[in-house]
Image (tube, rainbow, N blue to C red; front, side, top):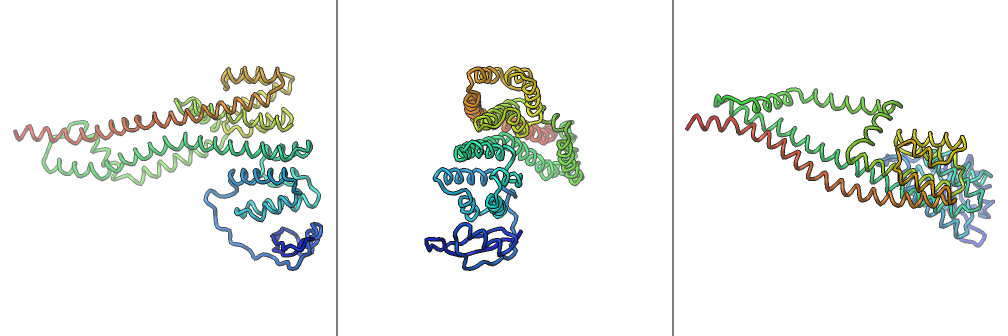
Length: 400
């Protein structure tokens, strides 16, 4: 659908301009007349060459900012179509701008906001659309949007913590491997040539290090191929259901990192389910959405088993405890929330607690990794240094 740039004046005589998605110029003029805008010029925008954005697509930060601004405008009493028009025109992300303007056009044509957003899953997921639908039905759209903005902001924070928990140790280990690789590739051959020229008898440790250096120098291309192939195979395996369960299960059982990932999963579960329930979304649908946004196959399977039990008439706490994926404290607090009728409030408190726990756990892991990496590098480089100096001691004793 083409975009049209238009200029005109509102009923107060103020100059107005903007961009509108429509089938034709006549459709643009008709839409603007319904807003009591007298159109002066309408022209089709030239096709833009979209430069690829770093990260691509529509980010969670874009959605969070849009939702926060949308809630403020709705709370201030601005008409829905006008809010979408303003937000669309000021949106810097071209892909997201097109989505907002299309939503605006669908709403103006008579669709509900939730129905219009449901057509754009790349921007608005099931959780977002269902909460908006509940807000429209209950007449509390501004409140729902505020909750959504808070939820997305906290979800972005959790995602950042996941990246910190995963990327930091991987990057440190990678740098350590590269340092050792360069030493074996460039430094060891110099010593090997020296020992060969002097005719020194090499001990086993030195022979092993020299052999490893020779292999790296001769078959470096093979090492790169094997590493790339292993990464590709692992990614393909993770795309399968069995592979996802296996890898996610191993991650949850990993020392230190597994504890952090489990806390993140608990915080995400409680925050998502609490936000949906407080917005009036049905319990079964809330559990279904929460499972799909769990981010871990093992946790997702556990939540779906809870959903099945709830569908059979049971409470959430009992089947949740049977999954053995959630701490007993969480299950007990949810049970109290069910008994008191304050389930959403209890889930929100649990989420707040575990998000703070994640902060502390990530900080603790960072402090733990640094000395471990120093120790690892010290052992590896120390072994290489000793292997290179042992023949020198032999030569010196012979000369003596």
